[in-house]
Image (tube, rainbow, N blue to C red; front, top):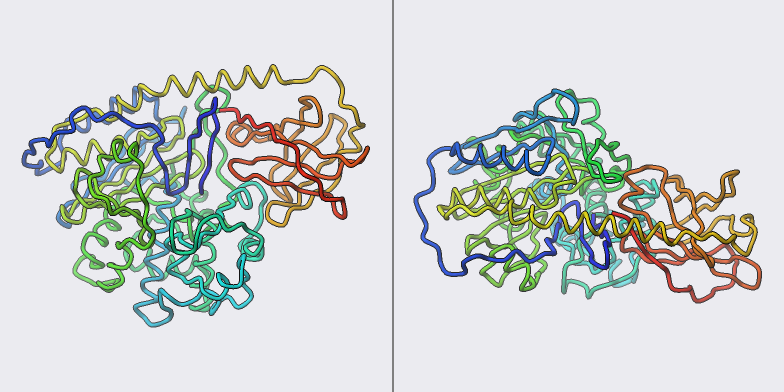
Length: 537
């Protein structure tokens, strides 16, 4: 899921899988560095380093796994599962790894390909005959490979499912109404709902459902004993990390997500450090685990090859020490290099938890870091790099300190936004009675949006999903105050109503990065006014 948080004019992009570090981290020495022999075992100084990061960043808990040469170097935990409670994180603590699930879904697809149930280049409409995409060419041609590598060019439209409580069937129905934002097969548009389409096509081909495919083709055969195949499972498990985020200036436990079902193929998996050791070994061994082949060599190569090219910016190349020019997305995997070492990687970003998995195939090294808070941005990236440097033989670099130094800027932006929000409250009454704004506003992708008059004022609800109160901010603009504090912190915005005479006929807004106009049925089509947007962080 792509999520953008606007803070004082800057945009921080958060994703369930494609987390782009927007700041350029200066490289202290661009010259080739002398490499030493990598350690034979887990160095104790890394324990001290991670413990210090945990304390400095006020992180509740971290789990990590490192494998090399088909052996587990370490699988362990640091800190607690939930602030204020004594339960410790260990190697069997379940973390939400969100978009790391994409590699599990493509592995299930690979098994189906190996068994002759489907092919990577099968048009998805072969298995989903009622699917309609934004134009006829896409409808007829878009393949499983296209959706699994994010190269259809169809808009991601994350707010379709994040706030609205739609199910997978409704996601498929709404695909026809999405915008095309990039040329077909020419570039990557990271899309969780694209994985919904792929997952439903796989399930239809196998006469099953996507959760059963994850369970029966991947998770159970590989002996991943504490890994989920549906997001809801972990709520009933005993050793689970709770999600945390900064809300109203204070890090706290936040409620579990309740809208993951629509994108199960993209984000259903939650797992442990111990299970991640087996998952990484499978991929580093080309589909073989404990001497048994689970996925063919050819299918593994397909997953780990570039199918959608990404051109990294100079800032991204500097921040990640990218040397090669061939970077892109495979099938459930990012393909890049780090200091010239090939790396297959992915991030996961569910509400209140983040994860990073990086495999160095030529070095037979795998690293996974899982963190149970959003209050430590990019710390998983810093820890993976610090661990990679140790096991690739590079001098230690304090990646975490470099990133920690940037946190005050984020805090200042949040405070400035809050002050600006307070100043925008209007002391004068709106020119129309509240009843004039009430009604059902329709949009084919993001609607219905229900505006109701309550004793305390106007409320807004996204279909059967999230509920908010509307606070008047002058003119015909209202501020959206979501009832859930976490949603309010990260998704608050403004809506502006459009008039035809004295009648309210439409509303316009920007939710995250999705801009749209929703209209009352049979209302005249008007040009929407400019939307004022300020998201509190």
